[in-house]
Length: 238
Image 1: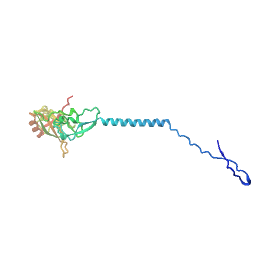
Image 2 (image 1 turned 120 degrees about the horizontal axis):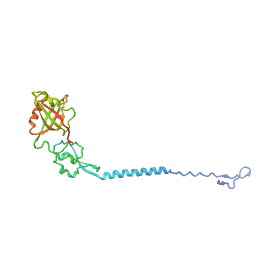
Image 3 (image 1 turned 180 degrees about the horizontal axis):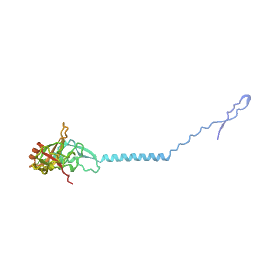
Image 4 (image 1 turned 45 degrees about the horizontal axis):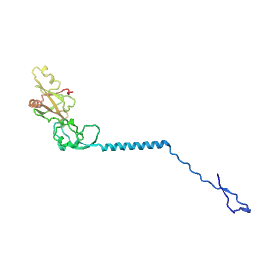
């Protein structure tokens, strides 16, 4: 509906009355409607964010103080207080050692090589001291051809073949007694403690620390120094 406005008492030229005119009506802006889909999406997004924050907060509340390795410890060495540190980890099902058991862990023997950053677990402890009573460790230099080409690992079981010929290979030493009538060969079982490539040489020589029976130590060291040893790798148990 349009309203009119007539000025009272106003006349035009010649005394004619000014006709009434319509006053403009201001248009009402249309109401904006928020789509239901946008509201639903925003609500879902808020709920997801709240869920993520809840999970993060819950995990943070369930972090436990456990023992971790601070510096390298070789297998067979005793663990000292300085070798350990406290780490806070979430309870994710891993079997760890609580930090409160530090006093019980110090002094125990590492069953495997411990690397910095590792969380301690019961299975890496309780190893026997190396060497234990009745055993000794001998370091032997092996050149290519005297041991397998693949890298040796701690715990590998090996057989040492001693021959009277100089510079035996792993294959020839195994058959020395049958191929050479005058040659003698003996074998001894041992376990690899460490295998370290010789630095500064390009021939691939490796120094292997071997755990062996105390009675075999002197002869193995003597034969190794003379280059009369070959190393054969045996299958791992299990």
